[in-house]
Amino acid sequence: MKKAKVSLVILGVIGALGTTPMPALAGPAAGAEEEKPEKAKKTFDGKVEAVDATQKTMTVGGNVLYISATTKLTKNDKAITLGDIAVGDEVHGTTHQTYDGKTEAVTVKVGPKTKEKGEEAK
Image 1 (cartoon, rainbow, N blue to C red):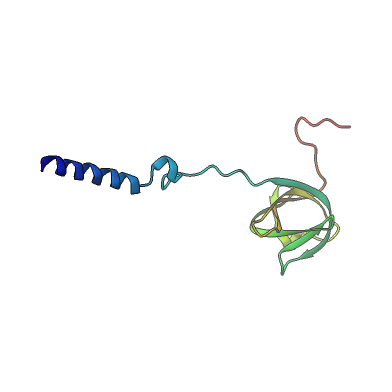
Image 2 (cartoon, rainbow, N blue to C red):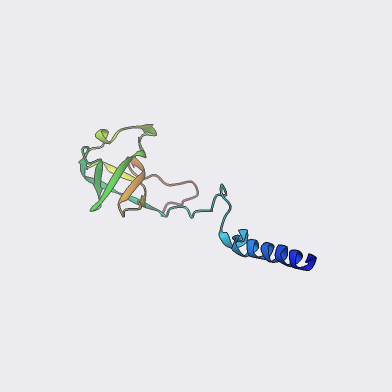
């Protein structure tokens, strides 16, 4: 009788362990942050061909760039709005693809592109 109880307890423990997910196989623990690759940023430069303040877009080099609330727009190192950008302005900056495939501007600087530190004149 004692052997039967011990056997049942052991079987119960094995059964409970068999249905419990193993932490190593279950993925990251709750609250643990997964490393996400940084969104691939691309640079652009050229003259503004169109500005649509209603749609919050601008066209540079035939590409429509979406301007979001987080896009950093500057001219002479001072913050500006999309309304301050005019057709024909020379601009440069960085973009990334959104989850729905749109090209969103991360930064837009109005004015000629300046050489970065360490770049040599060609």
